[in-house]
Length: 380
Ligand code: NAD
Image 1 (tube, rainbow, N blue to C red):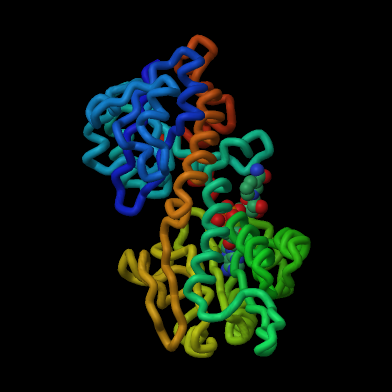
Image 2: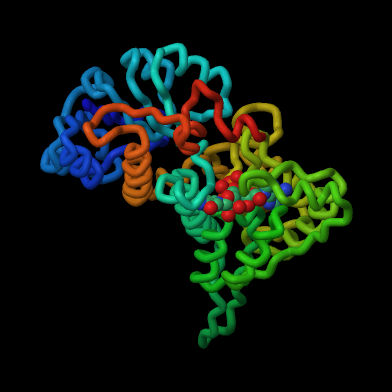
């Protein structure tokens, strides 16, 4: 099979969907791999390394002229025009954007959205959301540490003692748990909140304190169970009790990392302007839900209403960082992990003779194939 790996062209995207390591494995299985010149440059995978792995370096048009296209981000409209009818497309294709999905399907390809991979044990090695969220959680803490004008660890020096930073993590999923682990390694004192009861034990096992907001009604308890491992929107009664607790703890925190998401919906608001106003001057918010919040305007809001996507703003003396693509700031490892996820996924849609085999009895294939809708869309 001819496999194309075009360069990513969306602003700020530095990752690449195939690395010399994964290209070598594809070539060893008899595939012809066409890598666009410079596709791996920003992730520090030079063209030479791809050539040594057996790829052919080509221009944009030839990279798209393949039976199977591997992408990180979903193709832009200009990129979609390159797609070969009847081909296969694999990437993070934004399955909740119905208009975009319709445009992809109109190209007559079979497209697989890797965000829709179920959170099951068998799918773990292909789980791009986990591999990339893990990186985002790590980098969020490092970016916070850079913006914060104090130390993270407690230090006893000849010039006096420095207190440890207090970190509040809102949303203890994959990114939140990695943020907790990273902040812990830097010596911070950490608290965390999540809607899912399972998050309590995971948070505590990493040495952070869980902010318990007890469930008071059956409706609250049922909503907290989520669906497919994901959170569901919580009833307003629970959210208002959580909000009071979060406001109080944010006012004591030095760093707040927010990661709260609900698939296919706008991100929940956890910090409004009053909460930011009550925070200490010099404190830092890193909002991983930037650009996905309920505020009007695509670039405004996230878990914090004052967040601006892809900007660091200072409001009421608080730095608020709205990075929307932190994995691209760790481009080499983010690409390596993503490319391995992709390689594992390809085993499900390519048979031993190197031909496409789309078996919809496979739950992972069925969930990711766009023109059938996705499991997440069906359950959200
Ligand atoms: P996500 O990115 O969709 O959401 C991030 C976190 O925000 C979640 O923990 C969610 O519960 C939380 N959240 C939502 N609303 C909130 C609110 N109002 N306040 C506080 N927190 C809120 O989630 P994710 O990181 O992709 O993980 C989703 C689930 O999948 C988790 O249960 C995770 O453990 C599980 N998971 C399972 C596997 C597997 O079994 N293979 C792999 C990865 C993740």
